[in-house]
View 1 (cartoon, rainbow, N blue to C red):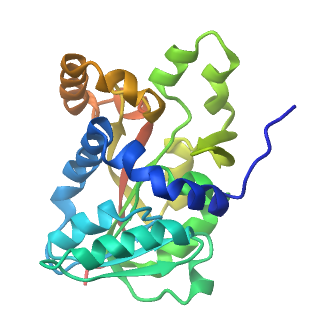
View 2 (tube, rainbow, N blue to C red):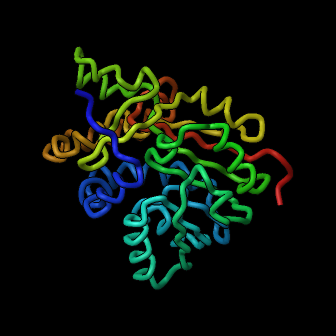
Length: 268
């Protein structure tokens, strides 16, 4: 019998309390997030207006705020936003962070307005949307000409997952482009996008600047306990990851893929 699928909002609400413990605060999880930050650093400058789309518990929003950016952090999980807002309140020495509850597929209906210099959607938030063309329309209305969009998504092929589950059916579940994924104790329906799909859906308004695999040699989060017990192996894999992850074909083989795009048009 197929496992019942939960709406994404319900699933992420139920996972909010343990998300940092099981991912953000782990050594591999923190390292992977820092890898994303290192790839974004060349595009970040103080005073930027930043949108964190699918912000979760707010770790990325805090990073931007500490670098002098004005941050709007949005998520469809109110439980995640409660945690993000609490972290923002505790951070006294940085720019304030505005938290907004909304469905990232319906940003127009939310009343979210203004032009952003940089939009980040990290660690698979856009895998929960159903229509990339709708995403392009939203980004067109939100991103300033000359602005940056960074999407870190789960792609069609993850080398670790295919090898770990070989020869079971789960080894190829992403290849079909749609499957159930675990979020905490729930399963949700997600889309696994290819780089080509995103590139074509967002063109010509958005042009690709850079591509990196996030978690090529480091395994997916369900194997974090295994790699965390092997610190020497972790150091070896993480060092190799940083070295190869921006090179083809490794940029397309990670648990996640970070694609950085430029909004065409004259800069402000």
